[in-house]
Structures are given as structure tokens and as C-alpha cells.
Length: 242
Image (cartoon, rainbow, N blue to C red; front, top):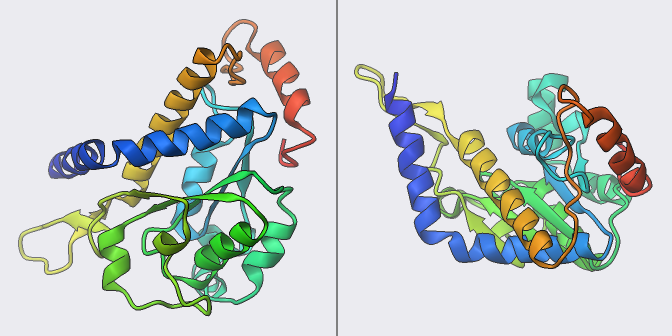
């Protein structure tokens, strides 16, 4: 059972050892966006949408996060359907047009494989719109899979900043005796750690600039509700889900 812990620790150590520069660059882009009154946009299809849930409306996290969540791309809205929808050309452009993204904004796009139509098209369309793209993807997995999109590129090829999750090909990473297939997917565990580490760094950078960081408090602590109400009112025009 605890081999899963060991695998996750090993991958996090690999990310810490090799992705610090990329994560620092990502945090700087996000800090710049928030400092000028804008937000961090996030997009992920399939299980990658979970990282958007983690970033959005989270106690101890940033308020100015626009999680672009398309129901047709979530497995809970129909697992087989979501897989098919992720290969639908044109869907990303439609979703992005409703996101309130503006030129100069920053969008983080997560895709473990980084080859499917919608995540790659989302990066391409965001670049055309003048946004800076941060990719969260597994380079090893991406290079092992043929390109499956009409853009003719991988997510890692289009991004301004690429953060390699070091997740192994196939995502599942734990070997079980007597079973050929590995089990224990790790992309969510690693992705959540990465995005929260970046949020912490962004908050540090905002403080260094003399900016009061727009963060949420738990509604279960004294004063939390009133604090959050003021912050939410400030960013509601930029994030429609608030």
C-alpha cells in the first residue's frame, strides 16, 4: 500500500530537482497578472480538471483564479462521452471565447499526455488571443504518444513555460506482483502539489512587491466569511463562477 507514497515522493523529488526554474517563471507570470488586476486562468480536460477545482475558491489559495470547467469534458458528465469530446475540433475555441480571457492574461493548461485535440487547441487559441501559456504535462508521456490533434503539435511545443510533471507513460506507477498492468495513477497527486507550490510562491512574490495578496480564508474560522465576501466582490467581474 505505502509503495504509492514512495512513488509520489520520488516523483516530487524529481520535480523539485529539475522544474524549479520553470515553476519560478510560472509564478512570475502569474504574479505579474495579479499585480495588474487580472487573474490566473486554468483549463484541464478529463481528470486534469481536478487541478482547477484545487486552485479555485480554496481556503489558503488565491481568489483571482478563473477555472475554465467545461462539463462535457468531465468524466462525471459521461466518461466515454468526455473522451470523445476531448477530440472534438473547435470545442476549445468556443469554451475559451466564454472564459473572459484578455490579451496579456496567463492561462495554465494541464494535460498529462499533451497530445489531445482540446488541450492543445486551447493552448493554440490562447496564444492567438495574446495570452501567456503555462503547460503542466508529462514530457516523457507526450513524446511516447502520436499527436492526436488537428493543430499538429503537442502542448509542450506551444507553451511559454513548460512544467514537466515527470509522470510515467500510462500514469499508473505502482507495480503489483502477479499483475502486468501498473496501478496507482499519480498525475493528480503530483499536479496538485505543483499548483499549490506555485500559489505559495506567487503569494510570497506579491508580498515582496508590497501587495496584499488576495487569498481566501476558511469560512469555518472567525472572520472568514466577511473577509471572503470583500475579496469575492472585488474579483466577481473577472471570474463568472464566483
